Image (tube, rainbow, N blue to C red; front, side):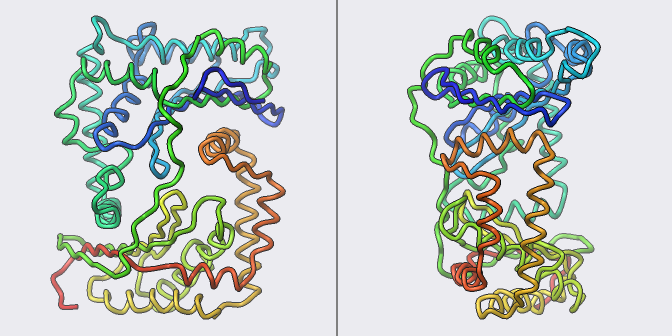
Length: 422
């Protein structure tokens, strides 16, 4: 059931007796802006760890324990040109407990308290809590940046999305941005989030849908005046390959390649692109895995990943620096082979079966239902489970070849462990 609580504020309830818990997600969606990304990440930290009613993590933990060990968390993510700030709470389904405690009602009250009554006074976040979460987020960002595989992938992002700083940086922002934030300005920004962001509330489980709707309607949400964010970012195809190399002291070099692939979520070629990616580098049966890693023994890992919200395909491989030329050559040969139809129908059938098994396994996750509801609202392109399965099964070898021919190598970033001539 979908309930419009205000213009731009939607409640979706997904009734299900499949799970022993009920899950509630509140998602704030806004256009992706470079100057806001780190602010929203810091907000997620503050909301996850404190509120007026629960001023520290111990108080929060006690409140969750009283709800039979409910699980609560917050985080940020990016989908194409949109940025999401998300709070999620999972609570036991009352019918499995020897108690008449209205847990779902209490869980919603808990979330509403967290969202609408943050810890602060005089129009600013509590200073001590703010300072602590700045340090925590900075440490988390810096620790991730120390991961060489992540670092190389991030440098490829910088190259792929040159000219669009919001797309270049991670969804959780940068450590440098934190130095420019203060408790008062962030409070002011949070008020704009509450007033302007598109809000999606997803409730999955065995719940009284009308009671849930009444409880959220009582908040009195105001209409959003800003238009709905666009669902897709269209990557600019450079039509030529630009490579960057950096040298560091490391035992395993990192090769990252970025391709333009103008295929978007549930649009034209989408299902063929899913199978193509499995064939190219997205599975243990893929050409990259079998030919670069297994047959040639030139990579510690080699895989590809689709981003159908930004129209790009990425390849990553861990290699010895001296093997750079050979690895790049073999990767290119695998793409050419797919374009020419050099793959068997039996392999395609196995890849489809793998996709279908993964899809059906995901249906056992309550979170899948919630996240899918968010994506459906963003794209306005809902598809039933049966339709998804039929669309994957219907993909032909000619369609896979056609997708492969849309792929253009744009950027490469090579983090080398030694200065060798290439």
